[in-house]
Picture 1 (cartoon, rainbow, N blue to C red):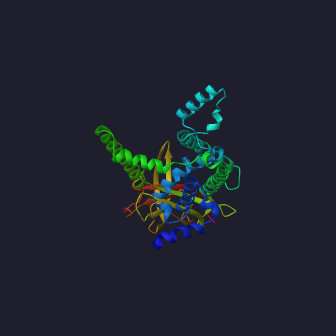
Picture 2 (cartoon, rainbow, N blue to C red):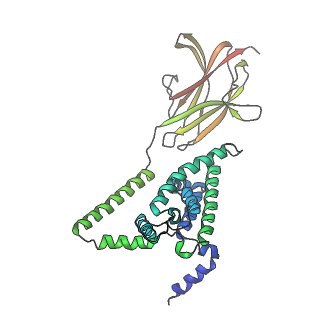
Picture 3 (tube, rainbow, N blue to C red):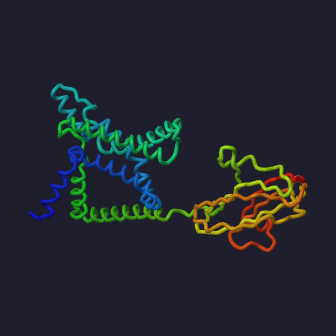
Length: 352
């Protein structure tokens, strides 16, 4: 016996007995739960396609499978075998019990998808009435907790059954049957169909993998907004300064969100404008540049904010403070017409 063969059993015995006796399918469920939590919470991994791959399985299949495993720990009897047992039971004058056969693999998989789609929204509904709310981490931990509890219950219930009545995933039999079917087909037609099936599966997996690794780019846009701070220090889109005195400075928060799928630096031009409105048309009669500032380089999906003090240089009613945004060079005469984005607010300015 090699050193590796002698060491492996010893390493296996180091594990706690409940872990060693955990069925393979339930162990896989726990492994997916752990992998999902890691790929969502770890900063580097949560930007990789692994997050989407494990997340889809975690949300759409795993909770329902664990719940079904807890409800039906016994092995299911195939329908054909069930019909034979019922016929034998009728001949012997006994009655067959449908409830004794559990559910088979196809029913288990179908119910796992259906129950997962029902369980996850219910968990979210409960979280909605808690202080944590429906946010990523609370939902992740709640679904993971539910799945772990259901898996533990399923393991206990299976252990309470006789060994020959417990549900098991016959993965070894599936591997042997698949190898036999692929390598030793009964006819050439079967061989050709097997090759076509494998090619179709590989094509489907490749298409899904490409869609996950290279997701659609989506729309390119930049957020440009103004905020203020309330009495609690919270940023709000309200309570903007409207009444100012000349040479008085009132702060507003200028925010930029980059969703252009590339790293960009922006320039903001703040102008004080006197305008005339005629119906839906607005004409700028006079404009004065109050300030100009450039953001640092903002990564894609990154944001940047700056507190800017509005300090008017002349008096008037219904003056417009216009912020013009430019990703790159600023034209010689900045205006609404040549700006990439713009926001504004109205102020009245009087003498101090």
